[in-house]
Image 1 (cartoon, rainbow, N blue to C red):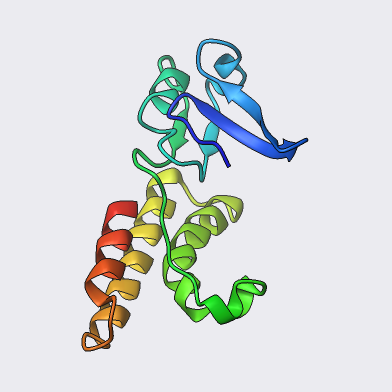
Image 2: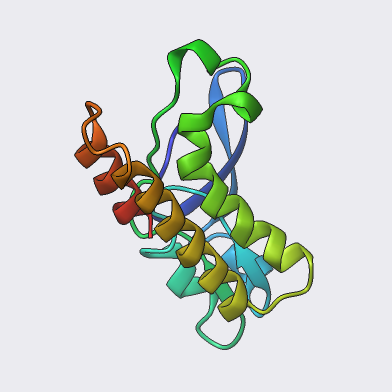
Length: 140
């Protein structure tokens, strides 16, 4: 999947990622809105362009990264490794859906990220512990 700090992409059409919101083209569609985009690097430029007058854009300045359990890649809901990374982002989205403010939802994300980091630290002797911590930290 393509990613850019200037674009939010949707589904692939004929193996090409479909741009939904593009900075300088149609980003005004989300001006003044509350937007949470789980799209790599989109907060670095697009997010800023979308809130010049009003609104709130929650996203990632860097590529969002996570690990998976190779045995569970086809069933992410049962993937305990991926849950450590996706759980915090899901909590943010769920908070917004439930009517919490952007600030409250972001705080939920940070708290869930901390819980994931603590869970990883309890298994500090396992291979990949520091790499996992680094990825979660870079997603915050």
